Length: 282
Ligand SMILES: Nc1ncnc2c1ncn2[C@@H]1O[C@H](COP(=O)(O)OP(=O)(O)OP(=O)(O)O)[C@@H](O)[C@H]1O
Ligand SMILES: [Mg+2]
Image 1 (cartoon, protein in one colour):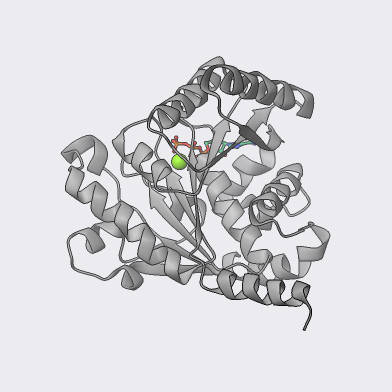
Image 2 (image 1 turned 90 degrees about the horizontal axis):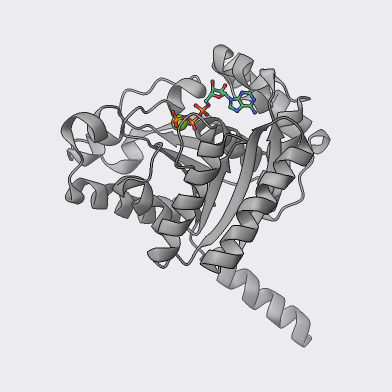
């Protein structure tokens, strides 16, 4: 056996024991598309053969289940109260994707204690043992819970839009992560852009400020233009990649998934998967 194949085997062996990559989707500003991006990325990654968990960490207004058209008897509140184990609250979304539903009102009404927050963040570790990728959808703002999930993740996917407030909020979140010595990777997806050029310009604006003032490398995840198919799919309670597989948003989301998983993906090669999974939803 040559040296190359020994190294390959060693890499394979190391890889097989590796934990899931935890990807947290965050933005600072609300209503920029975090939940839709998280839900659709999960489906795209499953199309690449990954086992994906998607966790709703928006304890103010949990709605990942609504976007995915899922209803679950149990959610993270049952896990926190000790009524259910983590694997007992999961619900299959489609082949390759399990959802861990959140619950609403906690952050705003009763205020989440540090203990509860730690318990949920710590649960990520055990989830990571059973999946290739764990995607966390977070709430708007840069509260303690959002930060805790970002800090615990390997990769934070920031979602910005052309709205100046959204640009400021993404930068502020990045700054707070840097101050807290976040060691993971950060990427930016510009959503709801008028066109690709506007999106790229916004990326360059934030990335150069991050490099200059924070000494942080912000990777480019992609640009999603304003697309009515996204809102139409929400009304259908199905992810846009399944409801409108030929839409521009699907193309971008497949590209983002490919960059995240480092597995080449294209819309056409995954049509078979999408067609099969569509039966789960419609
Ligand atoms: N590219 C897009 N084009 C058009 N509409 C979009 C696009 N992306 C998201 N939307 C719409 O924006 C709205 C907000 O999306 P979403 O719920 O995913 O945002 P969010 O960041 O998770 O919000 P919150 O901060 O409240 O959790 C939805 O109605 C969705 O249909
Ligand atoms: Mg949301």
